[in-house]
Length: 242
Image (cartoon, rainbow, N blue to C red):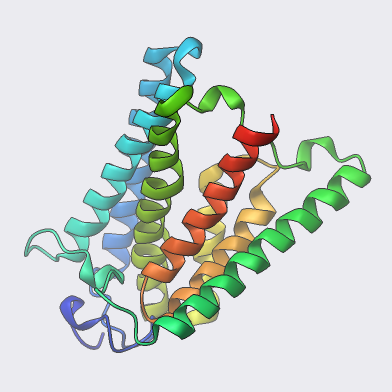
């Protein structure tokens, strides 16, 4: 393994020699912590609050799961030296803001376009189980409190998921296996994490596009922005069209 965790970004795209220093064992530990501690905590919050408080369950569950993602990936990437997010791609700037914006727009457009085409195909063919579900209006807090839902699902969730799935998972896999295999494997993990047959393929494609975006821009921020924009569009459709 070349380099160190602290020298990974900015300067070299995710890939062999990028310096992602937490190794496959660290990667496995991080995945296990998120799957066991993160998902169980989020699920427990939703269960305790009950069906009458699904919106608060979504907000608080997102907060808890995101904290576990950040904590697991940050401390493992810190390699015993404390909490570190910079090795995970959160560099303070991108090499070219204009290019980063262009690539982010391409990734967002590709993700939205594929999702729309996929939805049309499975709906036309009457494959009900594969139709992407709408976001229930019950998941959005009423009135001005809807801003909390937007903050949680359109900003916090994209940030923490990009740090974990692209910065932590994809970053280490790219270090070991190169871009193509790492993008594929991390997109599979990202897709399975959402555990709904209706979104498995669209989220897989989104994961590929976000991994490509991360590699092209050498920073996680454009991927966070594209992910946030897609979530915000979905939430807006829920609020305004239902």
